[in-house]
Image (cartoon, helix red, strand yellow):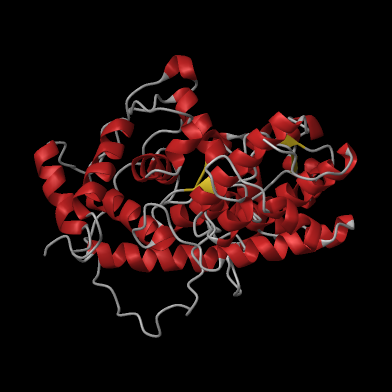
Length: 424
């Protein structure tokens, strides 16, 4: 293949940086989890009918948290009767799926197989939670279209080119070269409509860089995809502890961009962990902000009731850098250290328990229990154990003021509409 640019190596590296950071900008969001909602170009529907009241009774017990590889066990039986007869479950799912969606039989099969593979109970609540999330994230598109994606990429390329002092004409000339699929990179950017296409574009650019002797230590910036906008990192981590039930060619990353893979890993992210919520909308918030974010935001609210400095209720109790706990203390961590004497916990004990913030067992920690005991006593009542994380969503794909709470309530509306079909 010819060189992308007839300029010295540092210049070609700058060009690569322009292209990579452009794709990063268009693919990323402010949250580590998948869940940036679809930003409908015409906004939300003007009027939404009031959904029917869902069936009475508690939700079925949640599936377990992901165990370590050596201790994988089936999900426990549920406290609420749930039909485990596959035929009856398929009939229930068929009633719950919207009547007019493309490839309806295929969606039904992929959803059912995901529940089967993950050993999630066949209940209307769980089926509807999956259905509502798919509907919100992709409107039943296996490879959802991102309106104006090509324009976003060109805008990012132009901004990055200016930053590095590279004339946009030079960048466009380089992108006129033929890519591995026979089309020029410029043509492929012009035709970008989905994240799957953008992922393949980056992979071809990366392969081109290798042949040109450019830096090879690049990570693919396309982090989410598929009908449930699930994180590629989550899919890889989940498959490491709970075997993926399908055989496939290529990488697991590619499976995320398929209907069956994106549905499977999206449902795993939504339901395949034990959560302390009685209201499903907190699971929807967690899907957007990260597991246990709603529980952790309530914990932050309890801490905030005991200290003067205001705390952001974002559901992150610690700061992270490259997936590791940062040495820089979060505001929550600092506030708790100031409460050490009142909590009768040492700083080391506080640090120990904070490391459990992404796990179910955090609720059993001395830190969690003592904070709520103290906060409940001061308030004279039991404080909420789950609240919506207060997070503003940021992404080039989002043009309106959207939040995690907006996302959760939007999915919850779809969820309750789905439950109204139980008796239909």
